Length: 512
Length: 70
Image (cartoon, rainbow over all chains, first blue to last red; front, top):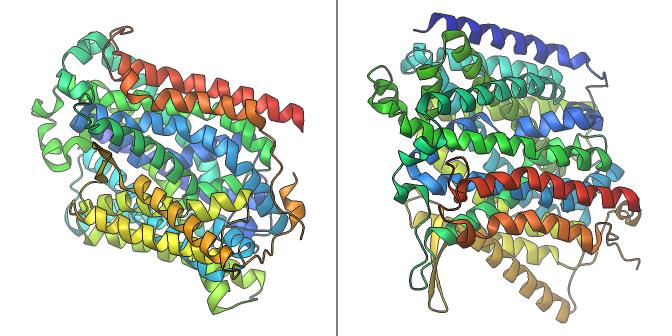
């Protein structure tokens, strides 16, 4: 066991637990109101928004999975970079408008907006359930990141005793999210991001220096691994997959409930736009993290006898923790591992709050107890956040890890199918709610069928079109199908004169 | 019935600013190669990494436009 690293790790954990509980007092508001508990009172300025969105989107799983993917799959794993470059221009164009509309009507979730815009609780329920289903395995995956670093500290992660540190971490997380709401991850995100930047900068300077420079690192990797296979006789192969995966994932990220929650919690469109100029700084770090995969490859970590057992147990996921253990002293290993673990708690907290907001607003209040008072609504959300988190914990404790990974992959595909209702609704009321619902349902059915062809192992589908062969991201193809169905059905309903035009949102909200 | 649509604020130049980094990182066949390399880093990798700070610059241009118009 690594004593120094463990002491540093535990110390940071206690620090952020205290910070989580104390945040209830920060920018004090009436935590009995859902927009206070679940959106931090919509008061976060540019700095906090920057930390919060960064802490939210770049999760612990990212730090573990991205180097693992590059280590294992090579160039394809680098898709995370174009994906995060695409996100900010997209959200810059779309989400400030959603903020204005949401603030005007006190909407907490994107499904709230859909319900009012289309006067359709059914469509809103579809959006909300998709959001909750896509978020659950994502929370579970955060735990995988924590599990890997706890294992890296030298603790066994099998059996009840082995799972105990994970359970303790999660109980603490659940408790401070319950009491402080979104203020807790917002304040912890600051600590998390500082730790992440320190760790990544140290890794990216020290490791290439020890390995003799980037030239030597890339030379150690076979060239078939370094690039995508060339386009051959109309077969785009991995190149069309890279393209659709990057674009589809970027669009999906914008629609995830935890992204909406972080965006709606900011002070306003000006704050959001300003923070998005500087948010690519995180993507830069992500690019560096991705290169760690090749460094682990060049350093031949799995053949080091001290690290071999970890690689045997965790596979490529141990690439980033392995580099820390190989090249750094104990106290710094503690800092790096804390960055990963705290990096798991921030998004897990935001995701559980986002899922709780969806359940409370669009399931409980829409179908179970309409017109319940604000205090009761908030209490339901707090309890729902606990249920969501313990559901995720049981998921990890009882089922094999690869289920969580496969479900998260599918979750991205599913959440992407909420795009036509949410994004087009911001711009136009042309679509009919029934047409959007039909498009959503057909796209989901097709996507699940397409994923089942790979045994839910992969997210690619091979499309044969005009004599060319295009392997593409299932979510992206399903989105095209979704739009085609929604457009055709809306046209049909409009021609037959039975389309719905009811809109319960206020026209003034669309003029900023 | 009053039309409930958002008034465009980014405008065409704003949309062009935001599209440039997107096109740059989606031009997969263009950057899927080794040379020219930079500090030993193949083109495929440094091209995509360079577009991270550049995307921030283009978002800044779009931001400046929106700020001036509002």
